[in-house]
Length: 246
Image (tube, rainbow, N blue to C red; front, top):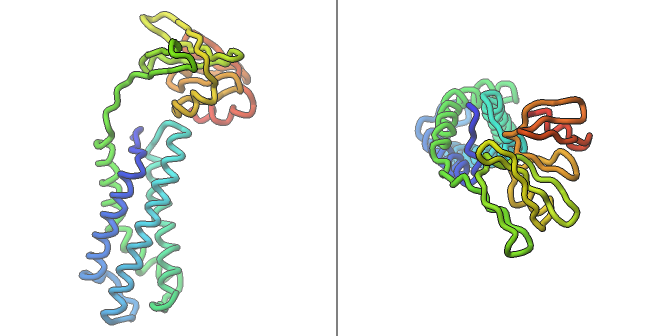
């Protein structure tokens, strides 16, 4: 796996669907028994546990979105980490709810975890994993064309995202470096690095004067310099850590 659907909106639908399914499952199947009986308990427990499930998955959706926007990649390790993070949040949240009024459950944390949440995890986590894989298929197909505009009406450049190598500061301008027909080209546009970074979040800052397209990163030349397609650029200590994950 090297792709994640980072859309928080799509993941909230997953969280809501799992919570609704979890409510029906908890209320009608009643998968655990801690010697607390009665209709009232199961109504309150089913609602509370699954509201917490939705909130826990919402936190996961936000955190993974921020992480993915920063590192621009995903892996099986990150995916497993997201599921474990969700389970930890769910376990802690439901235990606090379980021990609070009006439930006042009698199990300690260890027994609660082994008797209730681990059993639920065996049922819920596989469904969450399948739903997350399905979300990748819902990624909208976007045109791979970037339109870079400057302060002047004539300052405009349209290129493919894959062609953009880097952007460098040039006083009141920025210089766009890109490839077309296997040749290096550049264009000056009157705008700022900050503005371009806000417009194109995939660009990675490696120096106060340089942004790069991560797909053109080739290797390190030395501790302070990287090699890109047809180019090399300096790296400042402030941004070095972001490059080390590429």
